[in-house]
Image 1 (tube, rainbow, N blue to C red):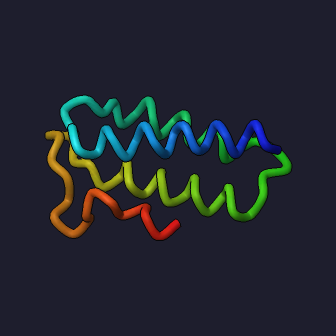
Image 2 (tube, rainbow, N blue to C red):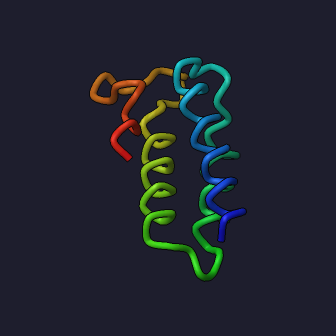
Length: 79
């Protein structure tokens, strides 16, 4: 399961950077990638929570590339 956690770490780090540059985000790609990770059997609860938070983060980026004003760029710092 360490490899899954490492992959989630990498996705999390990438998305945190991309949220600061919303024009670079391919929301559909990242949403699909996260959904595929969530579909893996045997995920730890902690990993599921992190992935759900990342999925929500991607969902806050509007199609125009604007970030919701309700979401700070460091929204995942608590996780």
